[in-house]
Length: 190
Image (cartoon, rainbow, N blue to C red; front, side, top):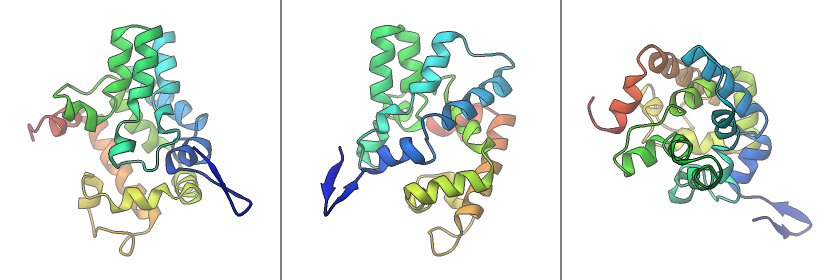
């Protein structure tokens, strides 16, 4: 997980994200819960709230956010939910990821939209600061698979993290207005 190198602890990208990055283990669930309420006009039930809290904990120890290891991050929460909460909650965690939903030819779960909208509810300065501290923002900006990177010039040399996140906020507003767009993008019905 972490290794000591020349007196310094070197953490993997996923661990940094959970501790002090854009998936920070306290802040991210707060914003996702607020987005759940915005999306569904009700509080999550207790088991849904547990899923909201743990759905990204699988990033712990992952060397990347969106590489092969990072894309499997929902597996940990899905296994926990399966063992302690039931199959519906396993799917809620597993398929909050559009990438896993596509991989398994499954619809995105009810958690997918609040997860994306919750991130979009973060103030720009907070998201950018956390993303820079953890370094993950630069990985996101390089990913061609995100529709956000098709809104303007691709790559870190062409856009600032703040511009990138403002574009993300525009996309989440569109998803909030048309939630089916998330599932249609996954299942190729564009």
